[in-house]
Image (cartoon, rainbow, N blue to C red; front, side, top):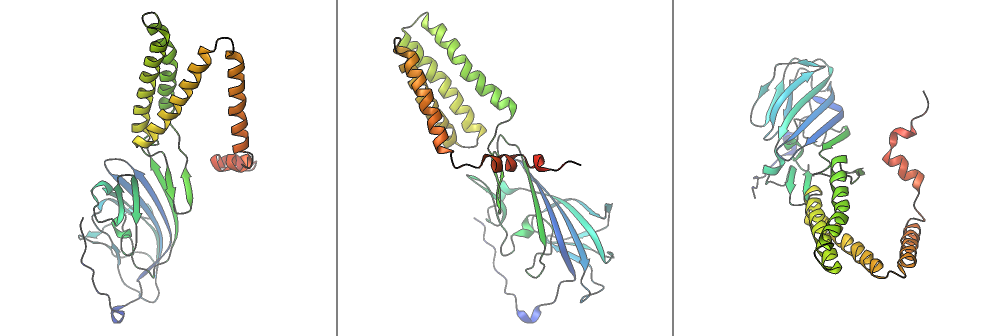
Length: 289
């Protein structure tokens, strides 16, 4: 792991920032090979320090674009600063950079670990994410948007809570549904050559193993795949018991469905469905024009 040698900062060297940033709009496009970060800063000159260029802090950022009020501007780069001169007193600055969280071993900024992506912005980690006046006396209001492949990154979290729920793409749902459906085709085919118990067991093992392996990769972890596989194992076990009880199959199936429905109703009896629906579909709350 890399470690940075801390630098001593003295109070006697303090000076007020030349610019203030009122709002910051951050847009992350997270991918396994690299992450694109777009930062839009509503900035204004600090009257306490007139005539100074804008100097932004950064660290290991690949700068792709710099615009002011939608127009490209000249700028100068060093290893850790981006400088823009002759700016108006107030303007909107937008920068686009590419970073590599998977290569970040400092545990500062945006980095990837075994379980996902994480950020550490204190004390000077934010400059490893985007160009910014990375100092504690520049206070701003932030808006953050995260974009990622829902198959590889099914859950996105911000500081204020859940941002995106666990879900599959339609293609992912389709292949899992086909794997479940093909169980019965395998069962019929194997039953022509094997005893029923062997045909059932072989078909169940094949489908459970296929689905668990697929979901482990799609959901980004073996734990999720094994959990789903364990649930399927229990389901196929119950179904096998029902099929063996020919005389009581209808009774057992009805009782099991009743118990499953009752358990679901009891577990969700205190759930506010209207509030949950509004959270998952915020556009539905919009009023009539």
